[in-house]
Length: 418
Ligand code: MN
Image 1 (cartoon, protein in one colour):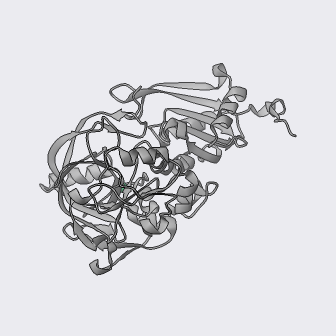
Image 2: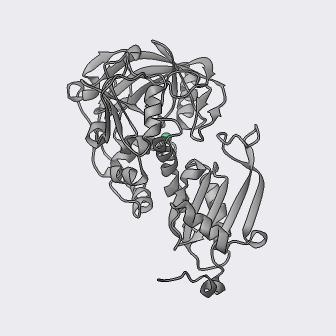
Image 3: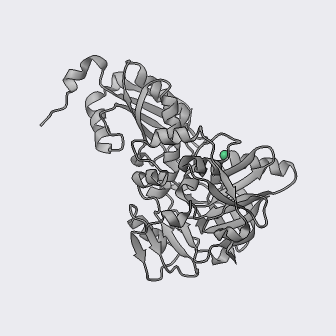
């Protein structure tokens, strides 16, 4: 389970490129293709981006396909995975000692605060809560400090608990991991469940881990790069940063990470994850779909779920159901909003509609939806801080659209056959 075993470059850039804007621009132009950069100015490391460049690619990485994805992951969530601890000598991640300055950390967009690490899986351990792995952006401040964006989820809890004990929180940041590890780390598991173990459960293969050199946490032994450090009580402005919507996220005071050591493989490849790019959206959006599927399945026979790409893979959900009762779409709409509170618009369609095809979705809305009958509006709901149209407080209006055919009217909707 390594990054390089999955990596299949489709474009190889041989000429030297700048980590400032140039790598990001090339990744942006080649969103559906994996790009390998052999020479990036100022670093010995190679850089790869768009490593997972499609839904099909993500499913392949997770050992499934688009049709089987939701069940595959939902079932893996009920299994236990297995970590195998290896000795330091057997861990490629620690082959070379390096420094933060030696890494090809990118500046992506004009207006971003600076150079950001965007593909870092941050691992922490807590005596009571166990291990946690989650993905966080980190702004590099200088050769020994970064500032980390901590949304108030699990790692924030670990951090707060460490501070209450009067200690900084020791972390290891793994860059360049197998997509299943990154996916699991972006998955909304419950607190106290170990995302690294979940990655192993998804692939039904053991994950090799190694004890950190200067921090008391386990690290994927086959990572390309490892940054060890501690999250301190010191705060520093973080942002602006281009997030999943492709608009600038606001500046907030966030914790400073003091870097204790940087290590990498011989011939390491740094994973560059383009903010708001296809790969970012896949890693952020797809891990939310199985939970929506499970919740919506409590009220209807669900066939497919998509956080659609036009909705930034975050704000719009489309759910295809096999409708058995007229009130099911409405129940599905509420279940989706409960399962993924960031969602803003939900469309429910019949199972003949391909939820991954925007034209099909629009067709369903055009021919099966009546606004005075099939629409439900919610006011003043908890929403996503990433939606620039939401109120400053994060409150937002939401809309559910039932674009399913009324049960008694199937004949009028029969689609022409050739
Ligand atoms: Mn967690």
